Image (cartoon, helix red, strand yellow):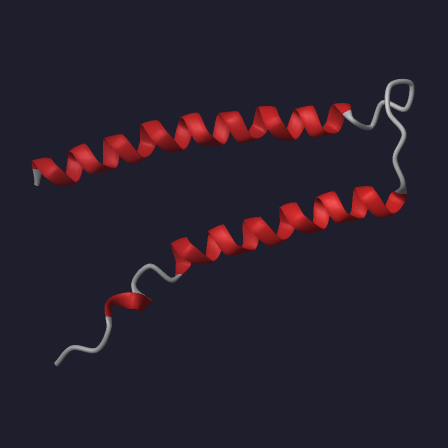
Length: 74
């Protein structure tokens, strides 16, 4: 039982750090919209957000499918 609590606390700590870092990085991507500093095409912007969306889908599926990979048992 204690091990479960330790694992959950470790998960929460890492998740908070990683999500906060991700938010900061997303905000930095937003800074690229400043046309006084950067030039970009609509195609480049579409590619950025398509890639981010695809990666989010992959990561989210890892959480949803975590019990599917345990195999068959009787």
